[in-house]
Image 1: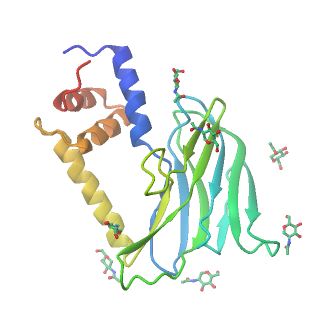
Image 2: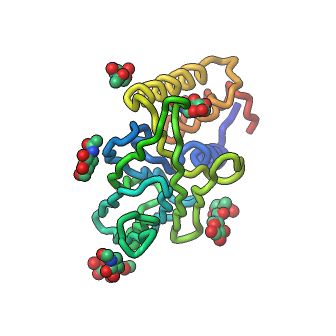
Length: 214
Ligand SMILES: *[C@@H]1O[C@H](CO)[C@@H](O)[C@H](O)[C@H]1NC(C)=O
Ligand SMILES: *[C@@H]1O[C@H](CO)[C@@H](O)[C@H](O)[C@H]1NC(C)=O
Ligand SMILES: *[C@@H]1O[C@H](CO)[C@@H](O)[C@H](O)[C@H]1NC(C)=O
Ligand SMILES: *[C@@H]1O[C@H](CO)[C@@H](O)[C@H](O)[C@H]1NC(C)=O
Ligand SMILES: *[C@@H]1O[C@H](CO)[C@@H](O)[C@H](O)[C@H]1NC(C)=O
Ligand SMILES: *[C@@H]1O[C@H](CO)[C@@H](O)[C@H](O)[C@H]1NC(C)=O
Ligand SMILES: *[C@@H]1O[C@H](CO)[C@@H](O)[C@H](O)[C@H]1NC(C)=O
C-alpha cells in the first residue's frame, strides 16, 4: 500500500480535528474543592491561528477567577451588578499558531453537589474559539450529538481515582490499536493521537489495520 504525502496530511488534518478537543485540564474535581485548572487549546481552527477564546461559565459555579496569559488580554462579565459571579471570560488579542497548544488558566470553587445518589455531576463550559480565518464552536452539550463538544468539569467523589481510571482507559485503547484485527473506533482515536505526536509510520500501520483505503 502506498501512502502519498498529500493523502497522509489530509488524513492527519481530518483525524486531528476529531481527536484534539479543547478541554478543561484537570477536569475531575470533588464537591467544595478549590480547583486550579486550565482550558487546554490544542490547535487552531482548520489551520488558522487562534485570536480569541470566549467561555460561558455554568451558572452552578459562583466563585471563579480567570487568570491572565502573557500577551493576551482578559475580560470578564458578571451575572449581576454585584460582580460576584462570573458569567463569561474572554481571552483575546493574542495569536496562537495553529500547530501550537496553550493553556488558559482559572481557579474556581467546585459546587457542593450531593453525590450520594449519583456517581458524578457534569458541568459544561461552552467555548467559541475565534481564529484569523473562521471559528470553532466547542458548544455541543448532550443530548445534542452534532457539533464540537463543550469542555466539561466532572464532579466526582474521588478525583484522583477518576483521573487514574481515565488514563487507564486511554492506555487500553492505545494497546488495542496495535492489534492487527482491531476495528473499534478507539483505533481511530489512537491513530489520531499518534499522528498528532508526529509518529507517522505507526499511524499508517494503525490506519492500515482499520482498513482505510487510500
Ligand atoms: C476555598 O477558598 C476560599 C477562599 O480563599 C476559602 O475560604 C475556603 O476555605 C477554601 N475551601 C477549601 C475547601 O479549601
Ligand atoms: C478547511 O480548510 C480547507 C483548505 O483551506 C478548506 O478547503 C475547507 O473547506 C476548510 N474546512 C472548514 C470546515 O472550514
Ligand atoms: C462591577 O464592574 C463594573 C465594570 O467593571 C464596575 O463599573 C462596577 O463598579 C463594579 N461593581 C461593583 C459592585 O464592584
Ligand atoms: C490589550 O491590553 C493592552 C495593555 O493593557 C492594551 O494596550 C491593548 O490595547 C489591549 N488590546 C486590545 C485588543 O484591547
Ligand atoms: C458519570 O456518570 C455517568 C452516568 O451517570 C456514567 O456513565 C459515567 O461513567 C460517570 N463517569 C465518571 C468518570 O464517573
Ligand atoms: C459558530 O457559531 C456562530 C454563531 O454563534 C456561527 O456564526 C458560526 O458560523 C459557527 N461556526 C461554525 C464553524 O460552525
Ligand atoms: C482516592 O483514590 C486514590 C487512588 O485510588 C486513593 O489512593 C485514595 O485513598 C482515595 N481517596 C479517598 C478519600 O478515598
